Image (cartoon, rainbow, N blue to C red; front, side):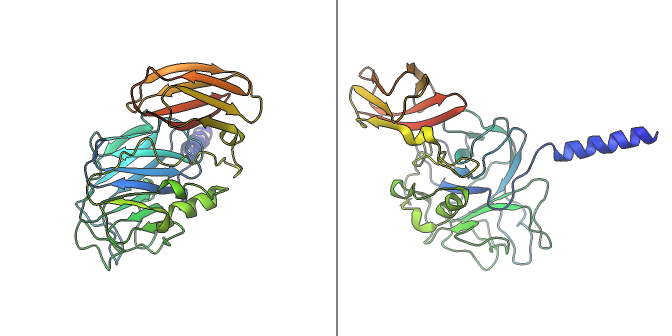
Length: 319
């Protein structure tokens, strides 16, 4: 009997430790759309600062936070359970219609359960938190990330567009407030760089001055993302593969040249369109490679380079 109790205890301990959960500052936001776009509806993009592993869970809500503590009832909550592993800097886009969270290759990042977030164009907020540790006034350790899109944090949560700032967060460090209020916003291209490790990437995402693209009209297409943050590895060093790839000309109408700063072993290249369809697959060898895209329709394509267990995604514009 004693052995059974010990085994049961060990099993419970194993189940509790099987999947690490996200902590404050291990996720950030890089875009949101409250207005309809040509893509999915009510999208927001998260940056996995430390990456993610299969089985990990993260919850989101657009509920406001009361000054006295706790979320305002009657709003939306859902949980994402990852079914894939993701490297640090990976970006995941979640949407209301369709209700899903997908990666930059348009594949499902995991399963979603609950009610998708119905973002208000009058201003809103999004909180990310540990589903096993719902934040409360007395315990805010479950908070992971926050973005406020209502022109600054409010004194209290009085409707679906307002929220007080939980004490766990510090704007510019672990949270961000977009001011003035704007329906759609994202980090813009000139501000995609200047980070060298996970800490500086978190600071980049939570610095509102880096969110240089805003609109109160039509929302942005969340995919492909403007920035590629996957050059940050778990040890904080820049990925050599990402730094060594040069693509030109870009934009192009016919030939694309891919150059590697060093002579890698065979690198696989996949050309993918914006609905996630693989258009072509090429094996690249040596330092200098050329391929022809003259038969492709004009538009934006993703170039996925795979070398061993490392992959890099670049964006190509076809004229």
